[in-house]
Length: 236
Image (tube, rainbow, N blue to C red; front, side, top):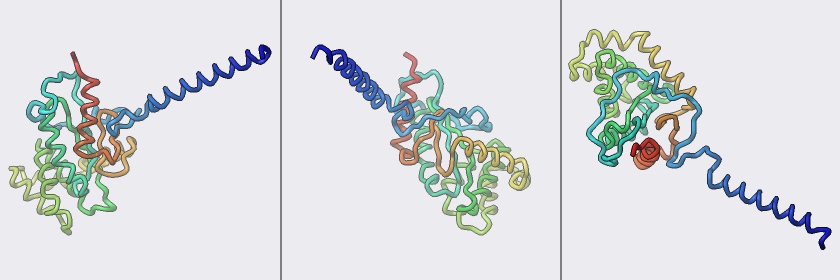
């Protein structure tokens, strides 16, 4: 028995080491899933190259009014104005903007799915033409709120021009800008950026550099993800 004792001890030590390693692997989840539907991304955040005229923060946060953070959570949406799920997500994002105030910064990137939505590109052009008159978000809101009004039209541009008129645009400039190559290039840059980040459909949402899983891209999933990141940014 004494002759086999060293071998028995070695086997027991190996079993213990393997058990500890397996426990740590399960509890840490390999570092890939940050919870709340968030996944890691090693890509740099596209927020740094976002276009100007980003969302104006709403009122003070209703969810975490007393939390001070080192920097806001950047919520980036890759969206298609004709996409029904994007239209359904739109009011939830407006509510989040209101609830969290300056704790969350919202950025929108164009990702029109032109093979599925015939008017998505024209709508993106209308939004970018509005950006040239410093009213991107006003047009953005009109496009989503009235999605059913223009989505199936053969030519939605007269509707977009009517929105521009209601918003007090310079209509000649707006019409010219809707057809400009410069705006084409902006939208193409958004699409290329999205593809480089792994975007394949809409809506796709990033919270800071973390892509939200599609099944978590809803009101509850967004709030859970934002709260996780706010806790990490909290200043005592």
